[in-house]
Image 1: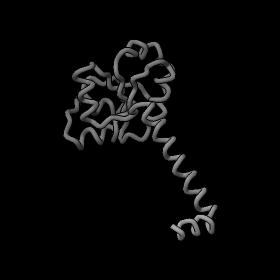
Image 2: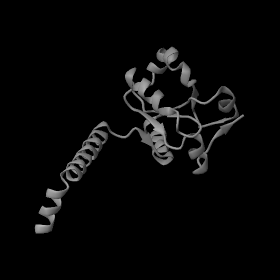
Image 3: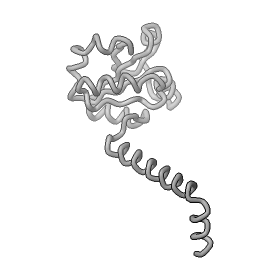
Amino acid sequence: MDQIIEFVGNHPFLILTTVAVAIALLVTEVLRLKAGPTSLEPAEATQLYNHEDAVFIDIRSDADFRKSRLPGAIHIAASAIEQNQDRLKRYQDRPVIVYCSNGMQTGRVVAQLKKQGIERTYQLRGGFTGWQSNGYPTVSK
């Protein structure tokens, strides 16, 4: 016990920094849990699609969408989300799952949709690539 007291006395900056980092991590986790999930694994997305009539929104390029997509997905380019506000309003009572090629570009779109009042908006973790690599079905022309 004496060694701990001596260590604290000799290293106050280290102790304060450690406490500050611990508090920051705790606050971040509490806020994350309070906000609820923002991304879904393909299995979770499938459950929402099958049981709650979720809508998939593909924000990839037109060519990628025409080539292959998730079942029932609608295509809206990431840059056109604002212009499609009226079209998206009809989905505000359903879960909306946004995906891109690899899951790296959906965060901004999810934030925009939540700002527009579509509260149950999620990112598909891993995007289209993650969906395919897990063996889930796709639709192609």
